[in-house]
Image (tube, one colour):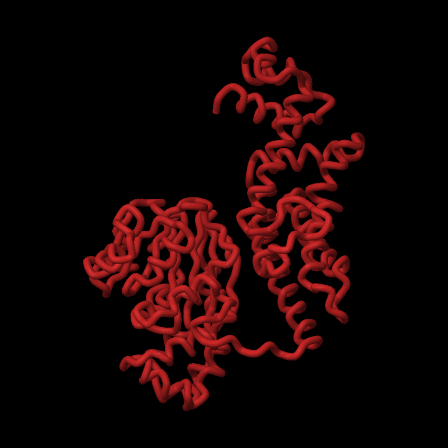
Length: 456
């Protein structure tokens, strides 16, 4: 950091420890080992330092919201383009903000400062309310107003906002009281899941079910619908991996322009999708596909090895340097190699940077039934093949055994019917074999599961 930046950080540290009024310019200069004159070259007084801190927080808060395509301030009426923002994205944003306010050193100190000063300084209380009190509640209320769209019978947006935000506020308070960050993050995730499930039940009770969207071209997955042409679809090796990827990455937390490993990329369709639709630099890793073939496909789409690099890699012995990736994305393959509780710590997490993510979408079961397999499933798969598929309870147990992670999500995905329909429209030996079970009704036992992991 340059001197100006060091002044900002040191001042905030002192403000958070001793309170704003108790800290003088001399104290800040002494903390840095510089003269008051040197400090005044950068800031005319203590107030200027404080104003710069507030601007920094406002900008960071705006950037955090912008990553989730949500408004960064509280306007009179939410802009039109935000009215169809997914609820799951709001939940992801709230969880990201929880991590930001508790783990980011600068943000955490600012939060401590305004918390300390709010009872004796009206301006500090206004800042506290903007970030953690009435401002945050109003933000959520405007979102739920847009979500309801004026439909009669919907719960009151103010009530919904309070139900949504009150546990977030409480968990931040528990963190300040010495609560375990991993436990609190898990509680927050459970709250989000329960809130969404409850909201869905309310909506289902109020509205008739919407007609199912056509396969391949449904607007629900606008990114994936660009790949509905036969040439792309013929590259699928199972239920539509692009729709799985799009649902999995909604509101993703991966650093913009980050380096992502597409683990188990198959013929490279998902790798192209990650690079083209999300702007990631992708390492397309697969054990069974030839990297030369995948590289040729990427080149035909205008992507060289500087954007998508094809490699042959065994998930049990990955050939990468430590902390190579901002994230690992794994579509329809993790269940083949990730069922060992030691796999994450020993085989995969070492290659993810601290604060990075692992996004997984895998075929699963609504409820494990291996002790008595339904007849319909056996039309296409034998017991050994079905042993790779399990329910959310099973996977939560496997992933939770890992050390040094926050488990942000283990839940059923919504695209099950669509991704299977797209796959069964294909004409190849594998899709034809799968049709036997699915046409017999096996789909009622199956699902897809999303898993989101953050490395601490």
